[in-house]
Amino acid sequence: MTTTLKQLLAEREALEHKITELRAVEQSEAIIKIRALVDEYELTANDIFPSKSAGKTPKTSTTKVAAKYKDPLSGALWSGRGRQPTWLAGKNKEDFLIV
Image 1 (cartoon, rainbow, N blue to C red):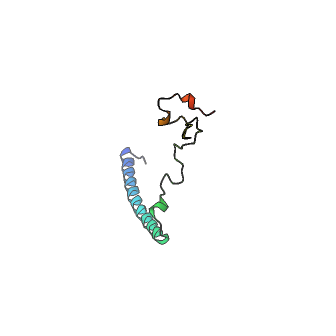
Image 2: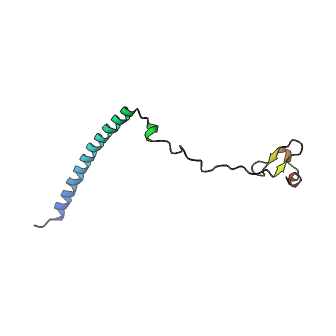
Image 3: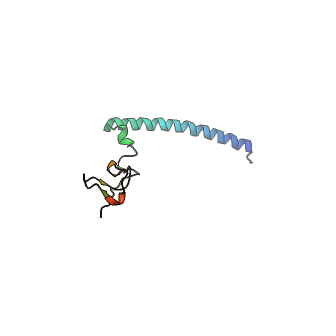
């Protein structure tokens, strides 16, 4: 008994149709079970699907940097990072270095 290409293609199509039907039935049954468990244990969406950022540290964490400059009048400090403070504007930074 030889099988032809047409026969095999027809069998594949029939199997794919059965698979699609069975998948739909099983998904429906799974949804019913899941909803029953959610109701029974009073679960929330956040219990089942917690936010992705929960418990994780931010990717860009900031670390403290030691101060490099100090205003002798006010005692204000600056690390040399970020925007330059007004008390240092137009002045030589080296005069305010912390030794």
